[in-house]
Length: 240
Image (cartoon, rainbow, N blue to C red; front, side, top):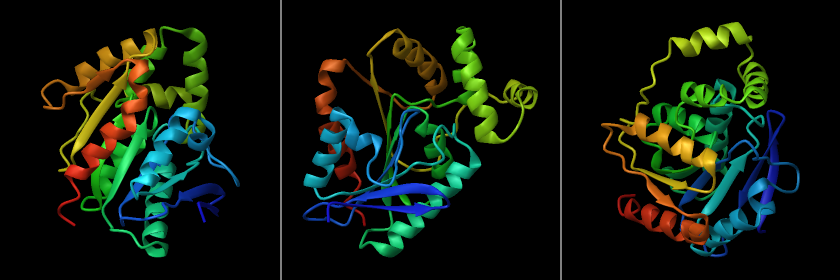
C-alpha cells in the first residue's frame, strides 16, 4: 500500500508509506493551495512537490498530511486537528513518536503553535517560504486592495470572527515571533517573484536577533529542496 486516505472531523487526511520504513515520520502542513481529499492531495498533484514526496519515501520516511479545513490561517481548529492527526498516526503506525515537520507558507502559522503545544514530540521543523506572522502578512496584503479583501474574508471564516475584531486583535499583537521551544529550525526561501522578495524582507525583520539564518535559493535550484531537508533531518535522528 503506497498511501491511505481517511476522514477525521470531516477533513481528509493522507499517509504515504515508504517501501523500506526507517521509523521516522514527517508531517506536511501545506500553504494556501494545499488540499487533501478522498483520493489525492496537492503534494501529489504538483510535479515538484511529488518529487519531494518520492524522495522522502525512498529515504524511508512515512509522510502524513491533512486538509486542515483548507485556508485555515493558523486557526485553533486546524492546530487541534493537526495534533489529533499526530496522535492517530503514532497509534496506528510503527513510528518514533518524535516527528519532523515541513510547513509551507501559511502552514508555518500552524507549525509554530504546534511547536509550543507539542514539546518533546517534534524532532525538527523545516519552513518553506513561511508566513511567520499573520500581522505582518496582513500589512503586506493591505497594499493590494483585492488581495486584502480576499484575505480578510478567509480570516473571518477560519477564525470564526468579524473584521473589526480581527483588525483590533492584530493591531495589539506584537510582531515578534517566539522560536524558543528547543526545536531545531531550518528556513528555506525560494526567491521566485516580487512577492517572495517582499516576504523575505519581512521575514528578515521578524528573525532579527533570533540567531536563525534563512537559506535563499533561486527557482532553478528547487530540485535540491528534498536533499537539503533530508540532510537537515538526519542531523537530529541520532538521539531517538
